[in-house]
Length: 165
Image (cartoon, rainbow, N blue to C red):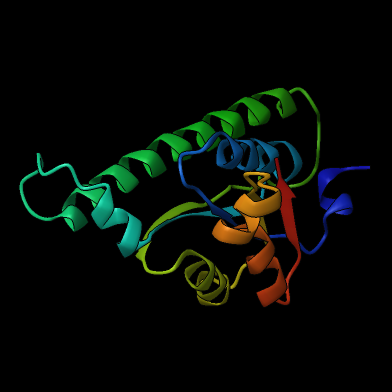
C-alpha cells in the first residue's frame, strides 16, 4: 500500500513544536508516515511562562528573546523535515513512476498565547487535515495541576489528532 492510498485525505499537517523530545518525536513521525504532506510547524509562546523564563540578557523584551528562540527552534525542525524529505526523494528516484513529483511545503509559525487555544485556532487558520502532537506523558497529580495540552487540543478540534510519545 502506498503512502497516498494509506492516507488519502491528509494533505496538510500541523505539528506543534516546543523543543521537547516528545515534539521532536512528532516531527519524526510526520516524516515517516506523511512524507509528502504539507507541514505547518507551530511554536506557541505562553506569555506567562515566557516572561518567567526571561533572563534579561537579550536586547529588547522577554517577547523578543522568546521570538528569537522560537524561530531558531522552528528553523532546526524545518531543516530536519527537509533533510528527511530529500532523503526520501532520493530513495524513490530508483522507482520508475508515471506520476509527477510531489513537492512538500513546510511553513513555520510563531504565536503568542495560551497553547491549547492557539493550537486549535492555528488548525482552523491554516486549514490542516490533521494535528500530530507530542505528549509529555504526565500522570497523576502533575497531570491534574499542569493538564494535558495534547488531550485538550484533541477534545477541542474536529480533525484527527495523533498523539506521539
